[in-house]
Length: 80
Picture 1: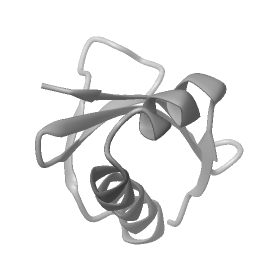
Picture 2: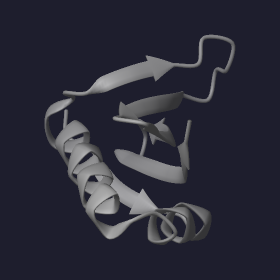
Picture 3: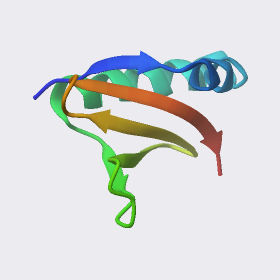
Picture 4: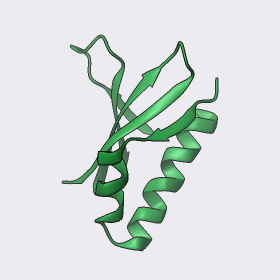
């Protein structure tokens, strides 16, 4: 199943705050996961809402998967 990517306002702001090369890698990884399901993903086990973390180098993408709408919502990008 492929997902439509929806960047929330906080997700867009956090993406714009990192270096543009890193932001390009993060966006590419999000698009790849949405299209193919490939990526270093950890689902938050105690959360029934479908919260996931996608690892992209030293960055993490916090997102939710909405199976009813087929939407992957990106809430935040942060650096470890």
